Structures are given as structure tokens and as C-alpha cells.
Amino acid sequence: CMFPLGKSGLSIPALGFGIGTSWYQTKTLTKGRLLSTCIRQALDVGFTHIDEAEMYENAKWLNTALSKWYADDREHHTREKLFITGKVMKVDKGVEKVCRNSLKKSGLEYYDLFLIHAPFKKNAMPFKTPLSEVWAQMEDLVRKGLAKSIGVSNFRIQDMEEVLENCSIRPSC
Image (tube, rainbow, N blue to C red):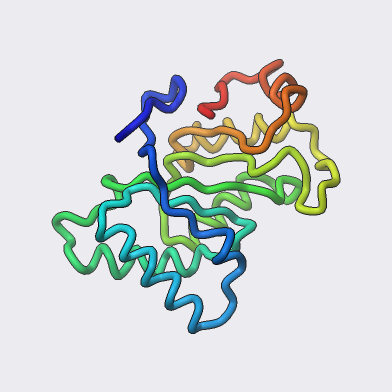
């Protein structure tokens, strides 16, 4: 089941496989291999949406899983059949820099959806960079082909208002 993703022209699968929460910051080789296997199993049973984030620090395990999954059936297992969501939390380091780093670690060329994970730092303190400037950096990702669509997560009404005030690309979600 697919749903339209705002005005982006894309559709997002209704169900996604998340590689955060219980997999948060998988550091050990044993747990990393298990995560990679679980991602491949999720793809094998029909999941097409993978939800990852810079904060989870699991991009290398996604890369391992996707590489093996593609190799299993190069004709039918293609990037174009997947919908991959990424998220940025460390916006003060530069959204594009974080996005490119996450893409490289994941072995991806682009995200289908790239989100600002929250309108504040991991420690709940506000960003140094105003949200309107962060959003302008997000829009650049679309223009450069690093993300097909962009959006927000965990935003309050006042945060959305700040983004919407001057945006040229509205958040897809």
C-alpha cells in the first residue's frame, strides 16, 4: 500500500522497516551482522521502505545488507525498487555534509526522503543555525539530487511556521 508524499510526486510505502530504536548505535560485529541479516530478511519478505538516520549510526550495516541483497538477484533487486528515508540531527555541522556522509556510509547515491530528525539537538537544546537556514540547506539537497523529497519529524507548530515562512520547497511530511 502506497501513499502520496505531499506534492513531491512520490509515493511512500505505508510500512517501513526501521533500523533505529532497538538497533540504536549498533557497535559490535555480532549485533551488526544480525542487523544486516534482519534488513535483508525484511527486504526478502516484501518491505521496500527502510528508515535510517544519522543519529542511529547504523548506515554501514545498511550498506552491508543492501550490497548482499543486490548481489542475490541483480535483475530484480534494484535501488529503484526501494524507498529509503534518512534523517539528519547534527544540522550545525552542515546538512549537506551530514547527508553526503550518511549516503557514503550507506552505499547510496540519494535518499527518497530526507528529514530533519527533530527541531533541536539530541540533548534537546536548540540548533545554533535557525530552522529557516537549515531548511534552505535541505532544499539544496533536492536541487543537487541527494534527496528526492524532504520533510520534518517531531516538529511543533511554531517550528513548522518558521520553515514554511520562507521555503521554496514545502516539506513533504
